[in-house]
Image 1 (cartoon, rainbow, N blue to C red):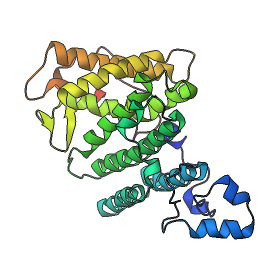
Image 2 (image 1 turned 90 degrees about the vertical axis):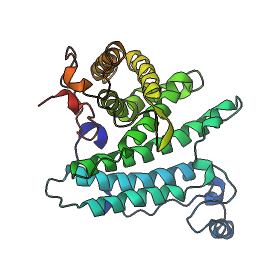
Image 3 (image 1 turned 180 degrees about the horizontal axis):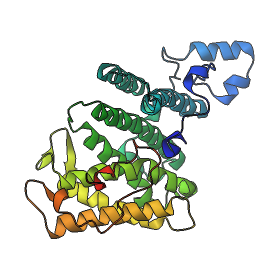
Length: 299
């Protein structure tokens, strides 16, 4: 909720004393003390089960670890008196990467997961959600680093491209994700729309040519394809749904950027200065780290 409202959390990590849940099954937790002790001893050094199962505790343990890091970043973003340095923020970002590197394979999403028609869609959904939450942490870190004056190394663009690509999986495979359709709207606004703002800016002010050196799948053509799909996803959200107006405004901006780029491409960038501003200038994002359309408000 903090990411949507821009308000501090009611209870932050500093007041949270409950330890992480161990990666145990419900049966093991409800068993006798001897069985429980053996199950705990069988976990690996990071507290994960070794049999490759994705249990409810597995998902909870992973999301709590990601949430603790997100809480730290949100504190930096929201606290006016914070004297955070670039080095300390880089340390938080590195800790986020190390945390996910320790996750078991059962939590890792792979693009080929959806190729299996018999795959458990709830497991795939959980894996995508974990990946998106981690990417949002990296997204916030990169936005904060740029705010502190760090030179842009295109990491934000690569992260944004993956966020949009992953969220669009729910749109392109909506028949398989019918059971979680109620989550589509907030997934769209939390991950795809902010990432879309960064992709739009890349089309208007290109930072690379051909294929991106750090991401072979990222190119101008790929960005246009993803944004075209994103327009359809945004159009799917209609009143009286929450954020329907914001989705409509985002759609109008992205559509305008695509029209401008495809109808009158300008070599070498500079397209932002010649853009026809006949669409919303103020998108109502309550949290500035998610407002990646701030370039609309030309100084």
